[in-house]
Image (cartoon, rainbow, N blue to C red; front, side, top):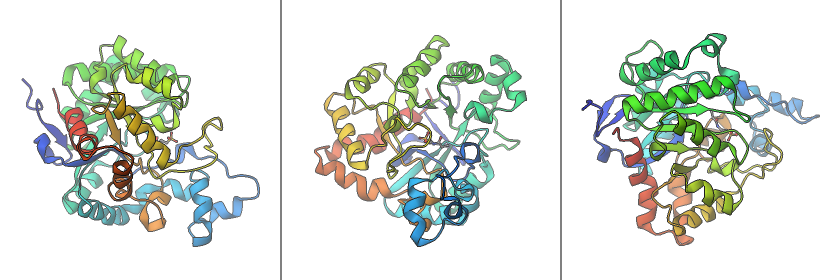
Length: 349
Ligand SMILES: CCC(=O)NCCS(=O)(=O)O
């Protein structure tokens, strides 16, 4: 039996799963999203150059990807430290930090933030979406990719001895590229060796999540230990959602706090409001999937920080939990979503 078995691996080492407490399963504390810059609407160029003013806050919430500076979360370590202290005060215990290769994972900073704040931080192994894969990555065999991912969990990543505790977020687009397919197969092979948790960023198409699970399953992956992220912007029809839920992965609503009219990466998408997200969680609980639901904010741009008038990492604990209770989700079920489900997912087999 491996020394990881029955434990959770944080950036500070192995911990007992009962120590995690309330857990956000999909956040970023330091990263760059420059790969996904989207030009501003015509006429808004001047605002995009100088967005961090009170009168531009609404514009920034509607157009978070159209301002270069907003995509550099890695410049905000002191603000993130303050936010983590506030998160602890609000009752939070753990954050899964989903930054993988391609969007500037910074393990020493994650370790320091965890030391400074007492929040458990779990780092992610593997690769983000195709446009961030280097030519060298694209040339790698599945075996080589598997070895790298396994090593990031067992020995440490990015030339450090700081170990990752999950694989992901593994980035995929739509359609899924050949390089992304190889990374998915490597993810499944690494998961088979390690018995570890996996988390996926699906493409922006309602059929993308099931296609990813199919690829993972064919490569021997454990779907019951895999999280499908970003369902808020991916599957909109209740019937389709319940069909997807039958496949057995964790179901993650991780864009709490993000409300925007025009989702630039796919204008077909109507981004739900937080109230609509809570309604969907209530549906999943009622239909028997309460032990599969996970939640988070996926903070990946500056404007989502409270420093810039955003919702911050404590929004779910402070505002969404009361709304969940008000909409008939029991306290027992809320505790499952925030404590038990993350704990079971994050524990190595
Ligand atoms: C790196 C952060 C990330 O991928 N977030 C998801 C953004 S979106 O695809 O939901 O727009």
